[in-house]
Image 1 (cartoon, one colour):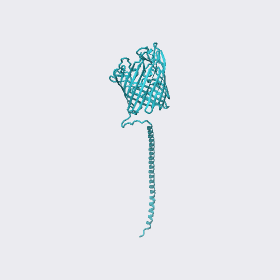
Image 2 (cartoon, helix red, strand yellow):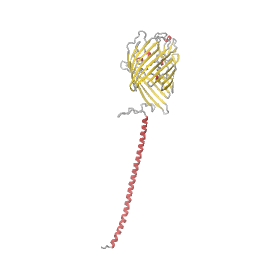
Image 3 (cartoon, rainbow, N blue to C red):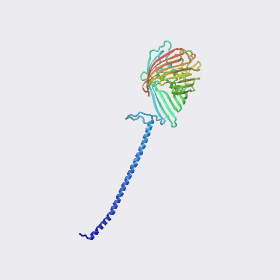
Length: 468
């Protein structure tokens, strides 16, 4: 079948027109799609960039946190260990305990609780109830009654007056200067109200100042142990001191300078005076005066080593009663010598003109008085030796001997003054737990007058002491 030529010619023309019409639309559609894709790609790139930036910021924060944690761990490792706070408990102190002190000061607190219980038997009368001699060994309180004197039955005393506490604030400045404030107290100070200070009801006793001083670098000012006393040489006694007779024992206000093994101090002066009582059978009155206008001058040199320590001290004093004056001086040698790992020997030897109030709790006077009121320094000497043996970390023992003697002029002060005293002590101290000491000590003491009358003391002393 044949077709018409004109119809054949219209088909290619229609196709060409169709292509001409559709092609621009297709090109336009392609361009719009590309733009949409480009927009989406740009958005994705922006989001990716934000994610990368956020990740970098998180990584920086993680690194900073890790550095801070490392710093805290380092500080904790260098700091002293402290007890962990129990679960559910919060610290009771959120600010410094010394708000009025220097920033960064270190505050410390300590002390001990001690019960003393003793049975005493004296040959020539009883020691007065409530006196210091009922609380610990004080040679001057031993009664000396002469012929026919009788101490009666033994007597018992319990007390906790030597319990003690102390407070300390230490500070180091940016320049390296060291400052320290220290206060120490016990309860051996009598009562503060009508029912206090006795054994009737409350047994209440007042707080007593023992030490109170400030130190900065090499200087010290305040009340503390005399520079003439070697506290490190004192034995391990159940009694308050034990070797009282021959011990230098004074706490008083002073200004002290220390440099290495050397120390020198100006200390509070005071004079004890034995009244004029020529050839009397009983001692005359003893008085104390604060008339001195020159402080006591003391100096000390210490040597230390694995073998122990040795200390040499000297003292110069002025004595004054009214317008009458005299002067004197004294020396003391003391220390501790280690004998192996379990034993040591402790000792002290003292001699001086006017050493009276510095030794044996003032057993002798500093000066004697004549008929005109003039004063003369009294010579005295004394010392102790003590052996300490450690059986085990929980058990130790101490054996002690102590003595003191004075060269009284009986033509001035009579026959009734103390010429000498001596004592022996032996103890066992058991520590079932750290810082807890349970001790038992037997002691014998004797005081002799210039006329050879004597009085004896026998005592069994026990104690329980917990240090904190």
